[in-house]
Image 1 (cartoon, one colour):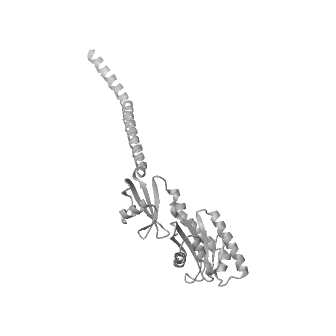
Image 2 (spheres, rainbow, N blue to C red):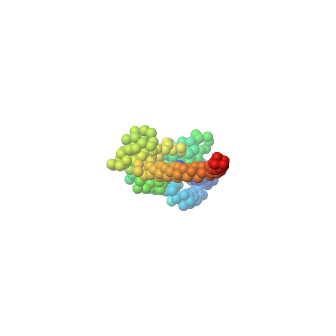
Image 3 (cartoon, rainbow, N blue to C red):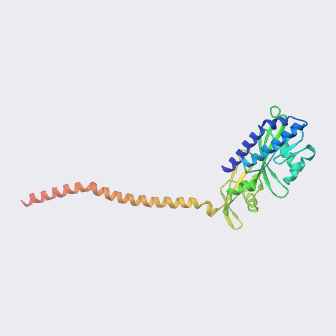
Length: 274
């Protein structure tokens, strides 16, 4: 679906950024030289271009574990001040660093919330010195959830996100829907704010997040009612056409026999009179 393709595209972009030779070269450094600082500027420009190419990305960065440096789409941060980048996102540095540290494997997608209520999806791509044991760097791309999910929302429907049975993004209506559902099946009708909604879920294939959908019942079944009306109309047309065709073809089929019977009846009548 569109939501999945959004994270897939971002994962692909993170993989392309992580493959940059300048970036991978800096990942192995414990101390940056003057030349490395110049190369760092190239990474800043690389991230800035990636945001222009994929406008769903709100922030891009790489964290180098050996040097402790962080480079974003706007500037580089030395080890003592990497927490300043988290402050630009209004995200507590401990949460931000844990999100990077806890990302395992090659790709990871996880939610990240700011102190002012802004919700992000953090897509990370890890670079290792050997087979997934010694992590050198993590490339991170942040997607602002509200900005990317609004295209699937309108006055009759809304999208929300759930992780471990808890709503991590969505309205108060979505919170009540999650409470009423209690982990139940999709397609259940709920009464929320005095209106009936159909609630359904779709588990993400790329992370442990579940997409939830709330749609007004009248809107949800509108296409079904249109299909039912079309089906009834087609049945009526087929019935009338069948009756007309049966009468028309039965007359054409019976007409020769009727002529023969009339002819035979006339001959029989003539013979009887003679």
